[in-house]
Amino acid sequence: MTNPGTPLQKKKTAPLKAADFSQSTADRLAFGIATFFGSGLSPIAPGTAGTLAALPLVAAVTTLPWAAQLVLWLIITLLGTWAAARVSVITRTGDHGSIVIDEVIGMGIAALLCPLAPIPFGIAFVLFRFFDITKPPPVRQVDQWSKNKARESAYWGGFGVMADDILAGLQALAVYATLNHFGWIPQ
Image (cartoon, rainbow, N blue to C red; front, side, top):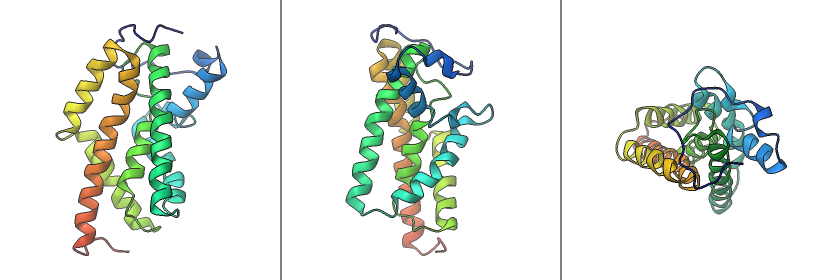
């Protein structure tokens, strides 16, 4: 495994392969978590594919009490940060396109207020993808910061990979909450 303090390259476009992560059980686990069980390996729109793959998990989590939801998302964020950092070290990239665990967290945050129904989930999905793709402030600034920090140290990069999607999820949640407050989201 590459030294965690080794500077990383800019985003790599070459697809990941499970064989690249066969050195240890931890590498294989990081690969599975970071790609959200392979959904990030989609050759077309891996971020959207990862977000779609997250919907069953997000739906299941919304049935839990509020405190349990927050604890679960925090645990997944910590695991995702570790996995993103490890994949970044192995691939020598700051934020490989196949890393989609950040989309899972972002979608989870965007859907925190959603009832278990298709239309509210669809609205949360569209809002999250909009904010994640367009990266309005401060998402773009955090994304750039994280890429710069990742070139210094993969561990900072792992946090940064997660941070911009957390912010995009919070932006989507704020818009969703506003629309819902005014009764503009059909239940």
